[in-house]
Image (cartoon, rainbow over all chains, first blue to last red; front, top):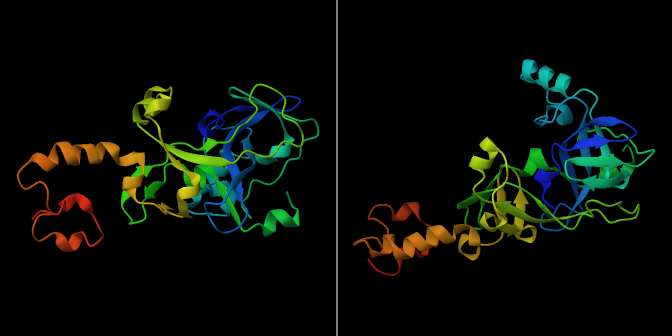
Length: 106
Length: 147
């Protein structure tokens, strides 16, 4: 499977929750080339587009763009891989009781 | 998500933010491609994922002719996408740096074919133009040993 099949997919829990706007991977160490594992998906309730890093990195300038992007992606959350029950074409179903994490990068 | 392990993990990569559309440089710093997609190891699509299923991993970075499909939709044929294995990635930053040379990748086969079969047959096409040697201080086989 390729990642562009998942980006923009509609995400459902008990009801429609939003769209996948990004996928987060974790590296075991600083060394790139080692396995990069899928940690989870960032889900935005209102937009399919990327948040360009504004939502997630604390960048606040230029403020009109930052404010617009944050508003479009208000309510975004991170769902871990363990919270995913099923992946279909353009649709992701989450497990009952899935956790909502902060989409901000550590 | 507020667990210590999350905040203490050394490195996180977001697909859009850190990888997609980044330029790929080979071991000599020569641009060879742009990342158009990420290939993941098997995801059990269309059926329930067991709670203890291991997370998918990035296996390759496909590149290909995606301009038309980005405008008009769809996807290029799989056969047109060329893959850079993830294990060849040395550094992820503003650009993606590889640990291998471009001639070891299939990504530049068209460029090599044109060089060998077209440019190389033009008189003077098998050596670096005089005065530009200093621009090519890295090893480059375009000269073909002739001058």
